[in-house]
Amino acid sequence: MEAAEAELGRTLPKSFVAWLLLNNGRSLGALVVFPVFDAHNPRKTWDSIVRHVNEDWRAWRDTLAEAPVDLSGLLPFAEFGTGDYYCFDYRRLGVTGEPVVVRWSHETGETVHVAEDFAAFLAIRDRVAG
Image 1 (cartoon, helix red, strand yellow):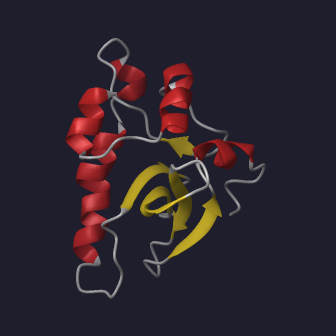
Image 2: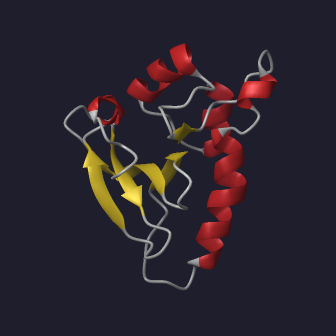
């Protein structure tokens, strides 16, 4: 976890870390949650959160560089195949002090509030439909 946090330049939310410690490399139904790379299980964790941020998310940031949207506080942690991401929004903290969860639209670059933190996000039944 520490290596991923160092590469990302952010501390991951505690509820997300707790979930990853038990579920790293697993999905939530159809929702792909980005794992933290684990050298003991590279087959399930190669497509890590660090890879997504450094490659896929960077491409979106570059594409939207001229748009009037601020992506600097967002850290994507999951996708569900539509091009949209679920992100932690470090600009806004929820009641637990963790970043809120937002859904980021690849079409508009805008976000919609989804949950107060990752633990609350896990409790949402229909995460994919948004």
